[in-house]
Length: 148
Image (cartoon, rainbow, N blue to C red; front, side, top):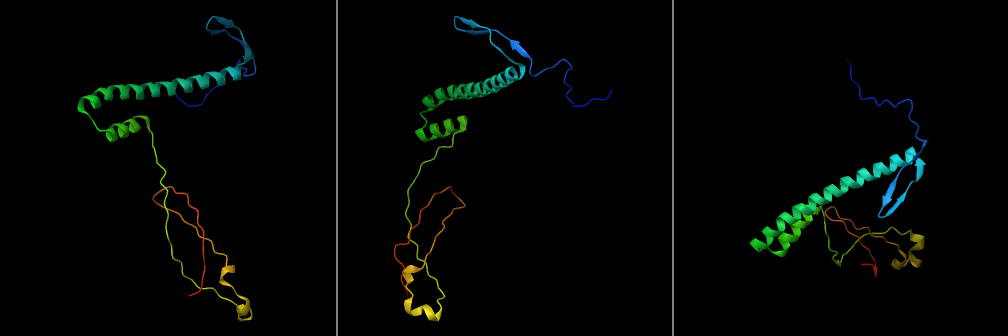
């Protein structure tokens, strides 16, 4: 017998069929009517949330198991925070402001006919700063441009 991974939709399946079901919320009971495809979407979201909840419960359980050991061994705060971040998959960052001084030298070609009217301050320079090792945001400003 040959097996395939093909999904066969039953002949009687109708995604647009209306379905009435029972909802119990506290003391209130209702019987909403929706299409099958809406119910399928709701069930899929519920399965996804159940999976997330299960993963979070596992993380909390892991944290609970380690807390007693940390207290008992008098671990330092850095070790504790680092392990909590590992358990929950956190990647905390701290923003550190920096300032750098850069010296740029270069040349500019000026037509001889324009030399008399040339002003180096009219040269429009732009600077692009990037980093391969860290995610940074920069802003640059050229305060003064002069000739050598």
